[in-house]
Amino acid sequence: MSWGSELWDQFDNLEKHTQWGIEYLEKYTKFVKERSEIETNYAKQIRNLSKKYQPKKNSREEEESKYTFCRAFLTTLNELNDYAGQHEVIAENLTSQIITELSRYLQDLKSERKSHFHDGRKAQQHIESSWKQLESCKRKFERDCKEADRAQQYFEKMDADINVTKADVEKRSSHKARQQAQMRHQMAADSKGDYSSYLQKFNQEQNEHYFTVIPNIFQKLQDMEEKRIERLGVCMKTFADVDRQVLPIVGKCLDGMTKAAESIEPKTDSQQVVESYKSGFEPPGDVEFEDYGQAMKRTASETSLSNTREGKEKPTTKTKGKLWPFIKNKNKSPKQHKEPLSHRLNDFMTSKPKMHCLRSLRRGGSGPEDFSHLPPEQRRKKLQGKLDELNKDIQKEMDQRDALTKMKDVYVKNPQMGDPNSVDPRLSEIGQNIEKLQFEVQKFEGWLAEVEERMPSKSDTHRRSGLYETQNSTTVGNNCAQDRESPDGSYTEEQNSETQVKANIAPAPAQAPAHPTSTTPEFDDEFDDEEVLPTIGTCKALYPFEGHNEGTIAVAEGELLYVIEEDKGDGWTRVRRNEDEEGYVPTSYVEVFLETNAKDS
Image (cartoon, rainbow, N blue to C red; front, side, top):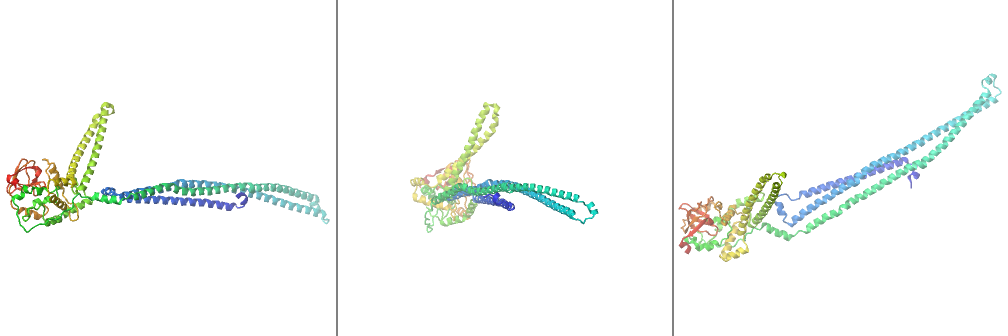
């Protein structure tokens, strides 16, 4: 149905309806705009949430990355971040495909509607003006007819009145009245012709107005309205398609989250706990019975080679057990190789300050360079990781050196390209860097070799069983391992003991090892009250040793000293210079010559 034929008289209502249609389109545009803002804000909040729970850049991040559930959660956060990106895509597409297009279309729609209704009003004004002219002609024709009638009546009256006086006849003759009546009749006839002609013209214009002009204008308005409705439907379809377009990627994000969740392996994570916290120590052995019923004193035979087998049963690992050679208990049984239980408990008490330091390191403090504050297994992993980093740095420096060398060769062959000497400072700097890094590698390799040698293994246990008494060796080793731990299970070995083993493995005159110090005042009292031990041999210092720590003695290279207690397997030999000066020196720093009777015993 056409608006032109059915709604020819509803100009004002059509004007109101089309205005409402434009307002409705503006309303829908505002709705899409608010939806786009919601998507943008939602994407922003999702991104902030993902960023908030991303692992921080610290040492804990490296630990978390070892566990499958942590990696799965990180993957979920990354997928969630991509998921937020798809909502940003929705907002962008809504803005570009709907909001921008509708805003431009609304401007064109308003202009088109304004033009159509301007033409309609102009046609209305024209037909109204024609109607007014027709009415004017009609009124003139009516007026002229009335004047003609009056003139005719007056003439007839004058002509028929016999009582008219002579003066009146002269004044108003019948001839003059007749002329007046004829003139009025002519004017009425002319007005009639004009009225008839304009009436015919008006009817034509009116017919054209209501059957041609107005229908055309209304048809244009109808087409405009239908296009508006059609455009609104297309936008609603696009509104749904924008969401549908991102569904495949959103589905991939959700699939990634699901796959990450399915990749969690509880067994693997529980095994990783072992890898992360394994100390490398053996469990402590049984506590031996300490017989205090027999008060026996140390004799020269106790320090002879007769106890060498028992003394060497101790593992090479340096622990707090090294402290006990400095404490001599008069009531100790002759064949006892570890401190009394009361001393061990006392050592637990004195290790609390070390636990405090270790906990401060765990809270983010800087540990020793050789990671000696860690248990052997963890220390080995840290040292290996450090070596890998150093080797990568060396390779990087070597690559730079090779590149600069090639550049220098090019400059030598083509001086116009550059000065070959300009590369020398950088090459020298790189060479120094490589030397420093290689020195660091040697240092860490030494520490790594030290740890690997000291770590208990099946092959080491089998090798030792052929040389020493297995039972005693295991017992002493277990006790040493137990002494490493504080009451809460923390590893509390000192860095000095780590450095000492390195010196025993590869002694050098310029690098004397450090030594453990006594941690309890009562130990020094026992050391002072000890009886003077007899001489069992002599020794010659191969390297200088400063002996800064308590219980040690400084010696010069080539100095001759008396041996009063041989190495018990812990890497220390007790020597005497005179009656007032005695102490411990590293066994690897001296050459020992035992007396014949001591060897025989």
